[in-house]
Image (cartoon, rainbow, N blue to C red; front, side):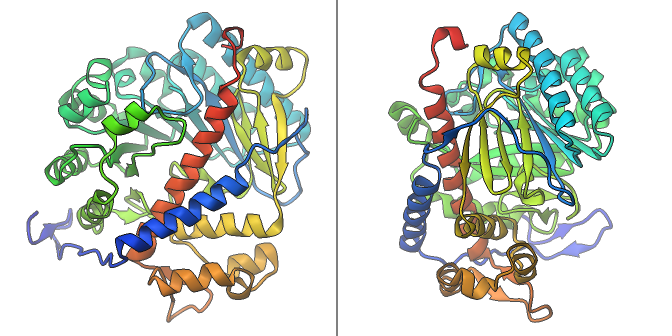
Length: 445
C-alpha cells in the first residue's frame, strides 16, 4: 500500500496503523467464554405460542421480512433457505403480504424495513409488490434495505426495485476467482470481474450500495485480501462489509476443513482490513464501513432494540422475548390461510441476559454508553456488568472518553474482540436455525 492516501478533496491522509495487541491466548479464551454464553442463552428451551404481543406505545420498531429461496445453495451457508420453485415462491410472497397486514392489525408501525434471505430477489416483481405493500401499510418506513447475489444484478427485472430499495447489499464474498471456485460460486455467479462490472452498472439504481466481503477462507492470502479491498474501493460504494467466515457446529466437517483458514490468521487479516479502509470510510461496526456514520447497515439489531419478523424462519425480539416463526413452508401457508401469524415459539430473557446482549452489541458497534444503560435499564453499567466491564478494560478493549464520561471508547483491541464475540453469537444463531430445520420433512419444503 502507498505510504500516503489521496482523498477525493486531494488531501493527503496518513495511512491508518491499527493497534491490535491482544494476544492469541486471550482471543481464544474470549471465544470460549462467548461459546459458553451462546450455548446457555440460545438453547432451544422455548415454549409454544401462536400470537405476537401488541406494540408498546413510545417504542420504535423495525420490520424484518424473510425470503427463504435460492436458485443455488452455498455449502457454507446455514441461513434458512430452500431451493427455488416459482409456484411455491409466488404463493409465499402472497402469504408474506397477508402476514404484514396482521402486524398492522395488531397496531404496529415501523421506521425501517430489512429484507433478508435466502435470495430476496428471486422474483423481482413479487419483491417490488411486497415493498410497495409494506410502504402503504406502514407509511413511517423511511428506509428499505435488501440483499441480493451478484447474478441477479444483470437481470432486466432488477430495475423494478429502483425507487423502492434504499440500500442494496450485494453478497460478493470475494473477487478472487480461486476463492470463488473453492466456494462453488464461480460457476453459479460468475467471475470476480463479472461481479465487479455488474455492481458498477447497478450503482445508479440505489442510493446506497453495500459490498459484502468475507475473510477467513483457506488460502486467502494477504495479497488476495488486498486485491479484494482494492476492487471494492474502485467501485466506491457507500458501504463495505467485511464478515469473518462463520463455521457452525452444524456445518459439515468436510466443508469446515476445506473452507476455513487456521484460526491464527484472522487477527492479521482483520488488521489489514482496518488499515486499508479506515480513513477512506467511517467504521459503522467491527466489520461494517460507510461513507457517513448515520446510515443503516446489515446489523439492524444495533439501531433497533425491538423488531418484528414476518416470513418462515424469521425471528422477532419484542419486550425482552424472542419469538420464532415456523420453519416449515407448509405450516407457514396453513397458519396464514387460517388468519394466524406464523409465530410458534417464544423465549423470555431475564434482565441480566438482555443487558449482556446489549453490551455485546455496544462493543461490536463501538457505541457503548453508560447513558444508554441508565435510560434503558435504570442501572449503572460499571456495577451492573462489573465482570464484563473489568475484563474488557483489562484487555485494553475499552477506555473512558476524556470528553464525555458517559461514553466509552472501543479501541482496536475492542473492535477485534467485538468482531469475535459477534461472530460467535451469529454462529450460535446459525446453530439454532440448523436445529429448527433438522426435523423438516419433504412435505415441509
